[in-house]
Image 1 (cartoon, rainbow, N blue to C red):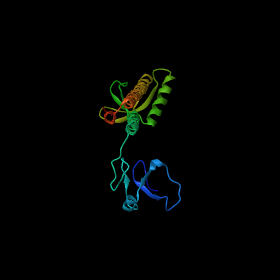
Image 2 (tube, rainbow, N blue to C red):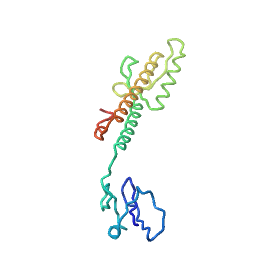
Image 3 (cartoon, rainbow, N blue to C red):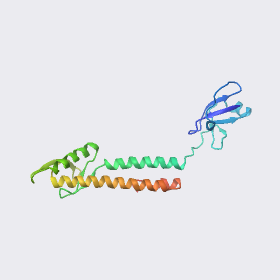
Image 4 (cartoon, one colour):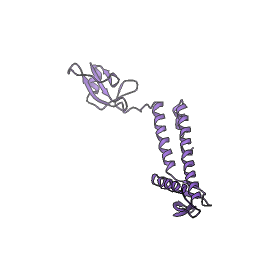
Length: 190
């Protein structure tokens, strides 16, 4: 028997196997296309692909993407979008006006340390500097009281929880989708 040995994902023929000429161990059947003498003479040695209908072709076929693959790609994108949202900063008016606080991992760690320290603060004099941006986008360390830094910590937690809840909702919508176009309509920004 003669076979075209192909990659099941790209459908590209990776090799030509002639079991009459060589005694060999064959790859899995899902990666083989049995071909006759005529197809062997016409195609072996040339760049070829195996079409979804299991015929040899000289042009790369359009890849068939399954619903599960579309869902997996969408879930990965949703996860990345959620992570980006969490580290993208959040707003809080603990200082009496709206400020934006950065929330990259180091920022989150620094804020947590300040919040923890504020829990043992004695007296109203306790202050800690926290980096934030005003409405004009000017960043600076601004002094926060214990109550203010705790409010910022709560706003950070709310922003994180909102992002995680949105992620869970979008993941559930992806999971329940029955068609690829339904999945493609599910987006973080929407």
